[in-house]
Image (cartoon, rainbow, N blue to C red):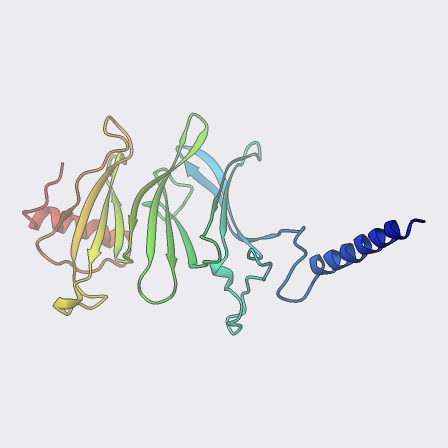
Length: 255
């Protein structure tokens, strides 16, 4: 055999072995890069979306782009938390068992905030009639968070994910109108220079989003209350707060 050809074959064999070794690391922090995996977070069954029923599956990446494991070990600070892993949302038709919607929440490269998701309805039971919303929160610890509110609907047998609002406040709430055609977003304004406490009273910025009807997709200009109101603890409290604002705050115009 030609000596030069033999050298080339030996070199290729050597580099191939190195590559295989680097791809097959199986320590606690690494994974074979050819085997991406996801892990289950939550399954919501029989969720009512416009009078059709679906299962919602929330999954998370098991590994980051460096093939390190997202861990549930709260004492291992060298690894990212499970709740910092990218999220994938799938919606499955419970009749045909077909996945009709699939969306991944993709973070910036090597940036892993804590991601919390909460699917919400005006009622507690997700199988009840009424609009479905998703509150998506990203934060790095502490009291501040970047939150987004999505409206989820079924239009011509297709799931539509509509982002209504981005807000950098955990003092934010939504209240549907009785007809369900619109939603009010109440965002608390934390005036620290007025010595307000987190759980104290606050002024609120109010925006109305139209979900259906002739103004569908539109929103009103934000308005700020003149008076301060107590912090709601649940949906029913937010409804009462909005009623107080309607009855007592002259600067807020309700259409």
